[in-house]
Picture 1 (tube, rainbow over the protein chains, first blue to last red):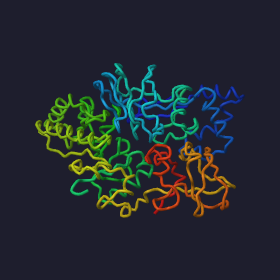
Picture 2: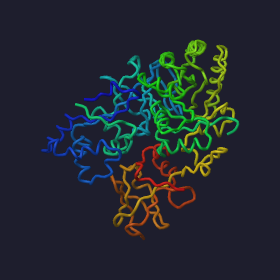
Picture 3: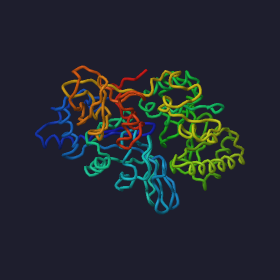
Picture 4: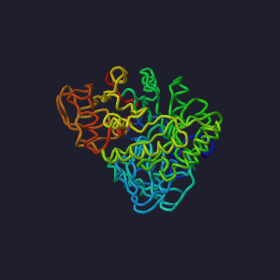
Length: 195
Length: 314
């Protein structure tokens, strides 16, 4: 469904799951074709700004924002992994510090891509099936994760909103609404539909 | 800032101010370099006809290093694997070696620095790359921590010099460039968001006509309702805290919805202009004061604003 493997450059993607959207819509007695023109707004820069309130509510249902199954994910790329000793300080203001010797991973997603900056030191991501904690101040274009002894290959995908609970965590920490967290994801992040 | 050269950093769509316009304005103001974060952003500037030297420092293994070299975009390297990928690109990449002086992001760890710089300068002698600079970032934690980082930086430069490094040095971004004169070296990196508030010689906001700092206005669209919401980038956690200015009076914002917000009743009519935030000295809050209410920085506000909402002050 997505051909991002062939593309050059840093991968920053907002993925919409067709199967999850279908399931969310079915729960409200709706079919994909009936809302297809509306879903087109998701792919356009500032597309949401032209919608009516009722259309936004329908989109929230389709995407599982707040209720239903979360049908979006924000995916970034692991661009650096390095071993550091215990007590290593991390990112601006040295708000993060490693407990033991560990691998620090650098992810090319930051608050200018839309993740809430105040989730510094409090967020979790997934690389493959494994969850890892964020460490240190979320910067404008980058954040750091604590990989422990894991050493995923460079270029691995890092998932930020991989489940309802992960989005709830972002909502709780940031004080933003689910629709807002989704809406804050900027144009630098490519919109793609996946199975 | 003289005699240091200035790199105008235009990453993140020039901090939400518009990449190409800001890059062009900075180039016309004789900025020496444009800081673009990634190669794709640099290539966008080249496609827009902007030929100013550019520097990219965040790479994927899939980044278009060959395109960067062909289009004259300088590249950071912070690990041996990155260095080898860059050296493999046809032509001579212009490389800035990054030392980790404490931020723990993509700089080379000090214990690996010697082998890293030795290899880089070997690649230079072999004609594969030019090592043009050694660089780093400061954490801004405290003056003491930044001084320590500068010491680490100088040690790293001295080590590189032992292998024949003859290039220039850059570590200071906007805050340090103004506060810590010894951090300026041969080049400083200034985020374009700082232009409006910072007295850089030859780079004042007025001279650049960048229209920074931003002013954002909305409109009264119904009784007690204004045309800005969280989908425009107005943080929803500002509700109950932020005020807006209409006709010379301030009104509390009670609720922030997706595309509109509600405010206290008062002396205004549909169609009146609402100042959501403005510049210093006006009644309306500034971007800085709004961000302080919710514990964040203006960069997060600016980069999250939707372009078709904002109007810029001149």
